[in-house]
Length: 361
Image (cartoon, rainbow, N blue to C red; front, side):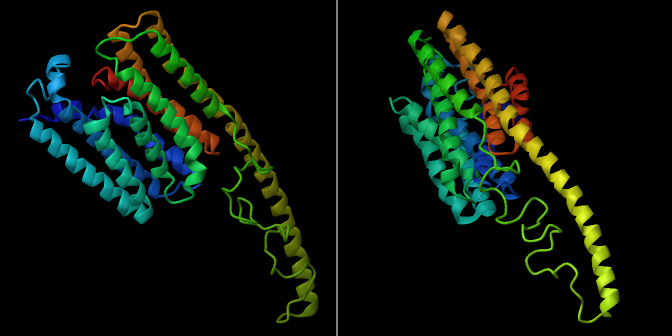
């Protein structure tokens, strides 16, 4: 009977740290980061684990020759257990996405699940394999954006998909080693991906990403109609109250307006500081995280160029998987969520440590 450790190895459990950032980046790009996002990220993880289990079930005969240490060919996990686990995780992932995001999320989760299984059962060993896997990751980003306008998340989805293409293309040479031309091509692709993620977001004068705020209001809910933030229907300054003595109302109104004006000035100063901080984060964080991603993954590919052995290729694939959170963090920060982008990227070093215990490939 398979142990929990065997199942963890089967689904490459720690590698799932590279998955939630897809959903977060998509939600940030579409401006729909909310309480649904964690649940959609959880659905994404379940579908990722399902794909890993289905992959090993589909490759069980090939792995008996090339990777006999894996759970199925080594006899630690039965093929029926693996495919049953994959089916159950797929069902759970789609159900969780539908429960969290309704029909719109299900409309992305179902094609994502179909594409994952299509890759494992049909496309993996064909020339279309890298493109199909790239589509899986692109759909994963769009799952996070499903509550908003998907078009806003398309650039992030394409960026993650391009990265995934490079990793998948390398993974096809994990056993045999590669011709130097392959890592040279993927390295060039990584440079393009990093450059796209590093580009600073266009911000408004408030330090906001266009289209993310509430129309006509600033971060404190004030409109431009009244500097005190009372809205277009507020009582004019100095006007009397019909239900109060005229003189007393005038005096009270003047005092109230002075207090509100001082509070408004303080809030305005706070808005300016917050906007400045957001602007700095939006410019610096994406570039820094994209550089971190490019250096880590790029260095591993450069080593493959120098020595295109199977071991070096596997190391580069692992670097591409564990380094993905840095790219996702850059994309999240580009959308105006700099601190959240840093939090997403923090999964990268943790993933590298866990990869020493459970191989992500």
